[in-house]
Image (tube, rainbow, N blue to C red):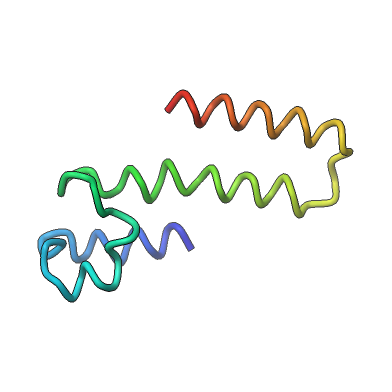
Length: 79
């Protein structure tokens, strides 16, 4: 999802200020300068993806999940 969304927005990067593009994709880059729209897409949405993986993959024990949640929170808060 993230890569498809990034591809779609990057193809429209010259027209990000147009109302039709803002209506479709504005949630993902609103508040950023025009050249930094990719930050929200790639870096900040990756944390959601990693949390989903930790939560819904049944490989990890509960203790391991807590450690991974703490580590991910520390990493992404520092960004």
